[in-house]
Image 1 (tube, rainbow, N blue to C red):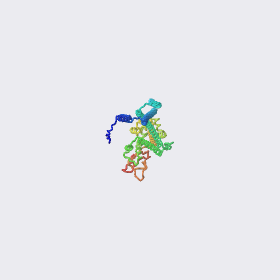
Image 2 (image 1 turned 90 degrees about the horizontal axis):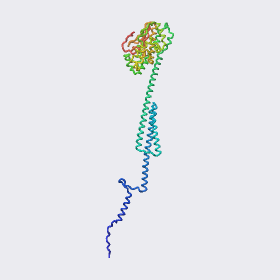
Image 3 (image 1 turned 180 degrees about the horizontal axis):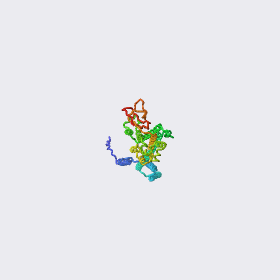
Image 4 (image 1 turned 90 degrees about the vertical axis):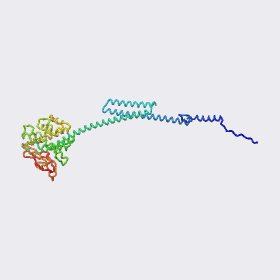
Length: 444
């Protein structure tokens, strides 16, 4: 007989089983720890502990590195401050500034003390600083030191520039003095000609050749003074063309270098004005032939500047003062030299110690001696000029330039008047230009 087995019922978890699974689950859960709501495995294994130690060491190294960087930054900032203070110390020594020296010296000492204290703290591992704050303060200190160094450098450069500018000004003044002295020496060399022909000259042996030779030296003396005067005008930045228009309005020059003849004309006509009057019209009872010749011999070797200084009442001294005031008017002197010092000295009877006046008085002496020599002949003395556009005549004129012989020339203006002594005629120096207008006659 078959035995009927009953159907097996559904298997249900027992309480023990459920408890076991719960324990296992709790056990596993004990391995998880909560950290700010984020679950992570508890570092309870050997591997995780080593990783934690390594991470901690890296953090410590990073902190030490930051501290060292801040320390070095602070050290270099201190060095920059010392450099700035030392630069300030040097600056205060020239020119000497005692207060600034003491301040700079104290700044150097303070920075050295700070660095020494920082070294001591480092060696004893007593550094207590915030890397971030220390870096910022060090950066500020270094920038301040650099700014101070740049300011001192700028001051030094400015001081050096001022010193060089002052030195340049002194050298320029010295150069101007040397140039003026050289111009005076050049004038003397050019104006002084051989006077041996007049040595032991007697009145009975006086000939027209003597007058002609001395006339040539006088013209050279006038020309040398004119060259010096033009140089002074150029230094004062005169417009020479405008000045020439006041002297010879219609003059035209074939070369730029010929402009000097217009100034030579002005100077010679001014200096020779009054030449036909004995002693240039100055009051004097001495008007004899022998007097003029004796005066010529006495003065021909004299130093004109020394002569005027020693004898202010002499006729030559009066003549020189009058001609200077006539030739060099006040506006001209002020423009050339920036003052009227020479004029004031001359009006007060003194002698200016300048190359310009020295050149003038040399020329004045030549004109004065030429005047004495002319009246030594004991005959009627006169001077003549040539009208513009007159035909050139070799009898009465001599050209101051070399001209083409194939071209017909006429007189543009008289440079130096001619002389007539009795029946003797000494040529007038003229500047010529090509014929372009009607001819006129010479007038006396």
